[in-house]
Length: 112
Length: 120
Image 1: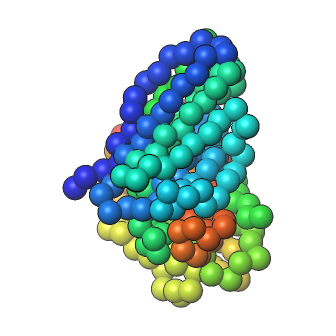
Image 2: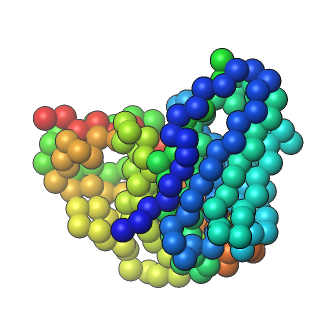
């Protein structure tokens, strides 16, 4: 069965650079969630989209922005990167009403 | 706001034995979902089991079962016949009921996790 795809899987950036993470949900899933998991921490909700509209927002820094496109894939844009942004970034997708989120493999971002 | 608490940072169990991981939560919502996720060293987040709050019957998935006590806001995970492959971090998570697009519905709130080691 198709799963959530995230790219890239690993990313190394320097401070103050910009990064773009991509998420391709499971086919027919219309909702995308982004989570950030720091080292030794639990995942923290960042933002979600339903039908290309932002549906909820969590602890996402103003330096980050995201959107969902017409094909339902989503991109998380991160600017002015800081060392503290180093984390595993998960994307999850679901279909309206199912309440089962399927997680992608994550993108490991390292900021040096 | 919801909170999820896992009071056991680390646990270990002998292969083939049974282990129970604890989770408590706090919410004012009456309709919600609870999940257990497994995160092995690969860091992939894998759904283990799901419980709908309106169902009194405890969910079961093969060797995994839960003890859901709604009044006590407790949601423990029992792993029977533990296997070496069960070694992982386990997260308990809460999700408010709602539909995609509803504020606060759908996003998960996670506990701090319990690291489980299965010993041969």
